[in-house]
Length: 263
Image (tube, rainbow, N blue to C red; front, top):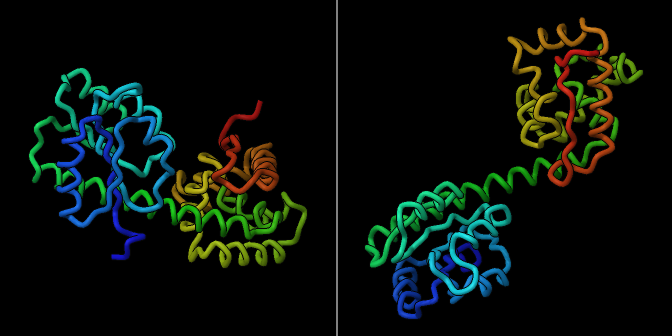
């Protein structure tokens, strides 16, 4: 494995002897590491682009371990946190685990247990980074669609048939088929079901994009939407809202569900 892809272990502990002991252990399993004596030093460190985890002492000067966990929970979701403390109690352990800690170990630590925990944490980090990479590819594919193709995609994943999509957008069914073909090609989708899953992952809408799979079939969903006055119009407005919004991942739009009652 190249140096650039070698897993990175962050250590935050104000005890020099603990940092040195952890350093020897981590280097022995082929990982890179960066050590810090305080949370403040760590926060100045940029986010890692490789699989990583954080070994975090609970009792730190200034910002303590639990406070740091809360600070980085949203920004460094790819970094599992392993608490390592000599003063942990049940209340602190529960709080740490509720906030998403990967594991809570006590000092003095068992080297074999810690190594196994680190390896499991790195596997989780790898999985998260892989999902993020896949999502970024989807965002780029969606960004390559024209405004009209975005409208068509949004209505298609809502369960509307080509004829219905054409009626809502004021274009012919043949034109809809052409746009739909472009959408499938650009999004690299081999089926409608795959396209619906992509739309859900992109969070074009967490409701509109799943109509087709909430019914027994896409056709049933289309018929339901088509037979209720005002529903298709709302779906069309939703499609146009998505077209005018930035690429998913940077701004989310709340879209009304096509099954919602129209007052």
